[in-house]
Length: 319
Image (cartoon, rainbow, N blue to C red; front, side, top):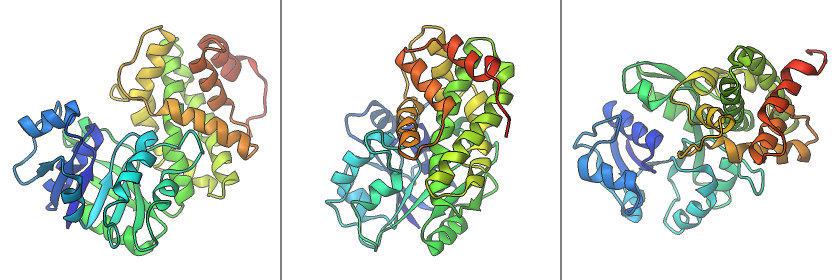
């Protein structure tokens, strides 16, 4: 299978490395002036991986797209609409698009597949690849389980057959709404976990996991998905990698925020939190954790007061 990776960040570049390793023809595309792309093209390395000569590396978008059966997009979620405006000027009919990214558009509350489908015809199938795991772990041979979902049953089956290996076991997703919202929302819960770490309240992560999953399940149900999806690999199953791992950008962002330090890398959960607050209002769903995280980020409440209200002071029924 001919596969093009559009995006060469830590996750996109790993996927290219992985798919090449299991026998696919891989091209990685990136912006010519992006530092990550320059390093990759010049050295065929990044801080985690060395890329074999069999992988093509290019900044020619038209060439990268034309040679692919499957396009895998792995960029910042808030840049997707702008990128699709460019991508849609190229012939996409018959292509299959997989989103290996997690987020919700802040300005509209739209899921990422909804954005892509605005720019393509029904002849372009769209799917998602979500679930737990960090490139640092995968590249060291530590396996994990992930989910592929799409409105197109044959697309899911084909991808799972082609992409599975001893390193990644894929499950068949059956709830695109739930898997997209759950995958994005776990980053907000990750920020909350980092805040707990920063306040030396890490013992409350168990309560955060329980209440966070329940909170997101209510939103998924209100949006027309299955509330059980929040308890699957897209959300609860991704908590270890997001709430505990040293590699989690969102957990680290929350920890540094409460310590008054600046986090220089991308934490997708910041924008996702804003979008979740918007969706909570739109669908009339109470999202206390999302609202608290958003207020702490905005500076309208202190982390200590916000998290104490959530977990230590308020008296509520559990279910």
